[in-house]
Length: 180
Image (cartoon, rainbow, N blue to C red; front, side):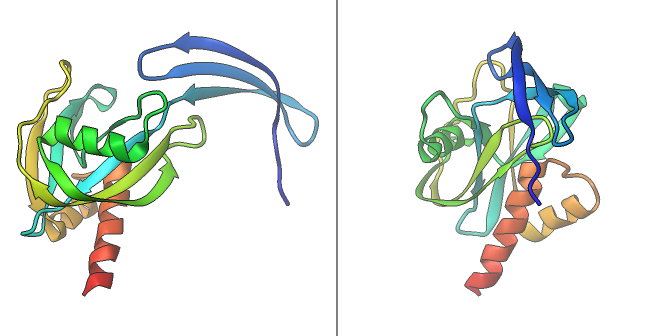
């Protein structure tokens, strides 16, 4: 059976640089009413850059929301009307300095569908060429290269807790297994 919620009223609460927040009044299937807080996000990309030597390039940066550093695959938000592939190429260059002559779309997923419409587009980048990173003015990023097996260990012991990175590395593990 399919259940839907009918939006009766929608009110913008906040409009920001990265996201918006709205409050929806919805009618439930049993005709009761409730409120839903919705984070509106333009969508994002995440890229798994893998070198010829089999190392994955990651970024380590402080994340204010969790008050800690996070080891992640490169990622970033889509600009209005931006093609996800172009965004992936742009973000990879900005955050790591790397360009890739092979960028392949893998999958897309919602990051937190309980309260946000953010859709993440995941890409694999190969045939990499080093360059100079061009992070945004408020980004302080360290570049880390590691083998997949070491990263899987970091997932298992909780050192990597970022969902896009976990999804991306598990997908990469599946791809590499299929290629053998």
